[in-house]
Amino acid sequence: MGIVKRQGNNYDLDVKHFGMGDSYAEVLGEGISHIPKLGNLDLRDNRLTEQGGLHILQKVNPRHCKRINLADNNIGDQCIELLC
View 1 (tube, rainbow, N blue to C red):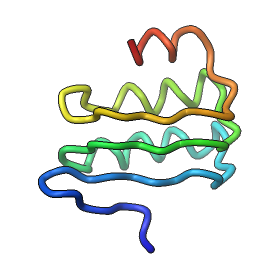
View 2 (cartoon, rainbow, N blue to C red; view 1 turned 135 degrees about the vertical axis):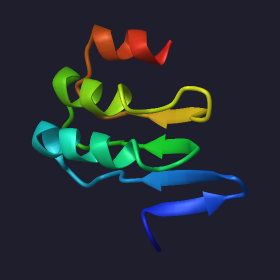
View 3 (cartoon, rainbow, N blue to C red; view 1 turned 180 degrees about the horizontal axis):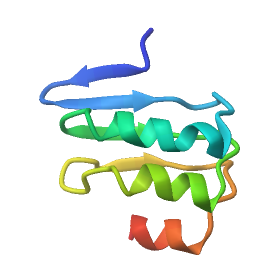
């Protein structure tokens, strides 16, 4: 099973439990910016902090992305504000 799945016109990205940490979050953010119509993003349990979360969330298009799961990460208030 791949980490990118197409669901109709949207794409889902599932990278839960990869343990990427903030060091890979910037690279993932750049990759996300090239996925058209990202509909769902699962980032559970990746050792992300606010810094890594911001790198990723700033690249997500809120018009298309309907669900972002950041459970079991240590994100901060700035990430939460971006999600609202």
